[in-house]
Structure formats: C-alpha cells, structure tokens
Amino acid sequence: MPSSLPRANNYLLNTPHGIALGSSFKWSGGQYCAIHTDRGLIGCGIYDVDVAGEFGQIVAIAKGTPEKPLCEPEDLYEAKIVGVSKPGEAAGIQIGMTGLDALKVLLAEN
Image: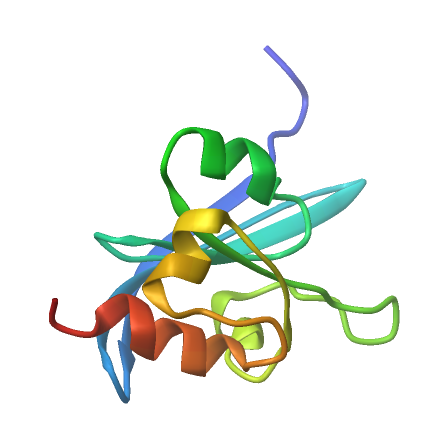
C-alpha cells in the first residue's frame, strides 16, 4: 500500500448555465481539474483534444500558468480555451472563449 495517495474531489457545480460535475486531482508532483457535462468536458492542458476527437468526444482545453495554475474546476471559468476537439468545434466551442462560455455551449439544449 502506498504511503500517500493523490487527493481527488468531485462535486456538483451550480453555474450560471446549469449544473455540471467539477473534479480536481492533486498529488505531490502536480494537479489537474475538469468540468464534466453529459455532452463533454472542459479541462486543463493535461487532456489531448486529438485523441478525444478520434473517439467523438467534445473536449475543450484551457491552460493555466505557473503563476496561476488551474487547480480547481472553478479556475476554468475565466481561463481561455486554447484547444478544442473537432466534435467540440462542431458543437460551437471556439479557441479564445472563456471556460464559462464553453460550458454554456455544453449545457445548451440541443
């Protein structure tokens, strides 16, 4: 049994556009976070949009900085989207929009 395990948090986010699932993971060497919806996710730079696109998944990526890392799902709200899977582009998510704007697309009625 390892002496320490990563910290994992999952909780509901009440956003201006609806409810989503926030997730964050931290360990001694790093962290990542995401906002999950039933249509896809917005995550930090650890995700690969090309692989997600191969599987038809909507994924939008935001990038933090060493000074302002993306540690908690709420950090993604104001972060700029820097990568989008092909299905995400088809759904209307664009590079340069905020994570909250991308979340509005994901939570919109089809």
